[in-house]
Image 1: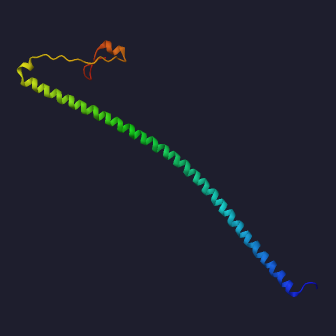
Image 2: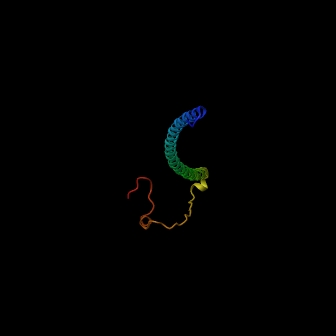
Image 3: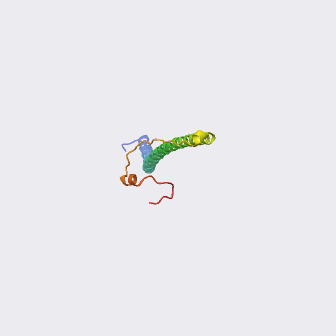
Length: 136
């Protein structure tokens, strides 16, 4: 025989090592495939979450803009109401002064109104409506 006993044992040991390494390769291949499948699922979920986040951000921006608009509209209404209260308060004071003064009680008061161009020519021909129940 050309091979010695030590060489045969070495060959057997190497064959066993090769078999063990092939088993490890099989396990690692399975682990790799599992990891790749999990990565694909996570990537899909990540993309879904990113789309959902974009939609949510769009809704948030829209709501913030609506809130700003409503706040501005509320401020304007509040200013109008404050002006109306001031006008009514002044009106009440004047009425009280008129009722207390005999000279003013018989006086006539003329006021001026700014002439604003009417957007509806038909309504300007008919005159100002009096109250809620005016005929049309």
